[in-house]
Amino acid sequence: MPYTHEWDEAKALPKGFYTKCYEAGWLPGCVGPPWPKDIVPDCKIIAGLKPEEYDYFHELILIDELSRCGSGGVLWAISGGLSIGLPPILQFGSQYLREKVARACLSGEKVICLAITEPYAGSDVANLKTEARKTPDGKHYIVNGEKKWITNGVWADYFTVAVRTGGPGMSGVSLLLIERTMPGVTTRQMKCSGVWPSGTSYVTFEDVLVPVENLIYKENQGFKCIMYNFNHERWTSALQSARFSRVLLEESITYAHKRQTFGKRLIDHPVIRWKLGQMARQVESTWAWIESVTFQLCSMDSRESRERLGGPIALLKAHCSQVMEYCAREASQIFGGLAYTRGGQGEKVERLYREVRAYAIPAGSEEIMLDLGVRQAMKTMSKL
Figure (cartoon, rainbow, N blue to C red):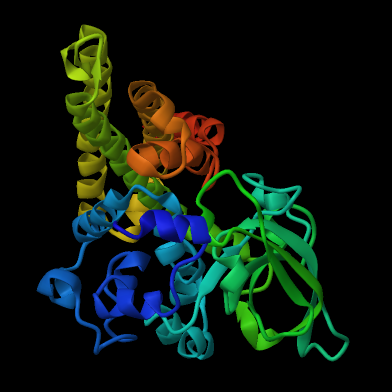
């Protein structure tokens, strides 16, 4: 926490930080249960847990505690690429690909990212345009296209890339592992409103020659692999934004006890207590919903949770980002000019207000999430 502002301004974490996160027992836990003991058998687990004990509540605690720093950029720098880029390989990749990248990424030696979003395809994943065409001898794919807003992309060693290998729509999408060292891969860091240390990147693939062995799962069946991890990605996004809402409330309460206006503390003004009460009721109710969903994740197998929790998690993600936006606005009003200044007493408030959009749009925009939640409920109702 003492270094968060420094790292945010530097737009990067210190060299060697990923290795420290591994040694602390964090990194392997970011890909979700079960703990990957077969890949990193020598890794100690945070809090002295046994591998078979690690579940979604432990991951919840891990994410929640790390989020106390009040920086989505730091959180995404630590695990943003890993938690979404590696699972497709762990779940669907060949033994060759697992051995090639899994341990190196989980131990912090290498960085991986997920490259799906394009300048012309965000939430509409099925209509992406990046093309992978096989060479005449069938030994390679030639990849051409652009990806945008790719978390960790600027320093990634590996890219889990959604490409079009077939016809239009989801049935023509495949996943390829593309390596930084392959000629034709270029990245540049984007200038975004927030989450600066996360390395948000514009990625270009120009005639990149990729061995067919780097195909993840089956050709034209990559959309299934992409969808498989969406619940986990959205759940972790909800956890982060929920803790950020609590951080904003905590900062506001602390400051309201120090700052004096018109001869009394801010906390002694009824209008300020009203703001704090509105924030608190939303923060506490949101956390109750998170624990309910987390319990269900622990109680269901992966197939059942994908079928039954896609809608609720989508609604939860939209709710959490909207609560964060509300708390960020009210906290900034309580802090006044300090919330308009980078660094100092209002550091967390200023930063989190900028980062609201990073939780309201990525991993499925609020609009898409709300619609998905209702459509999933309708689908379930039709089966009754």
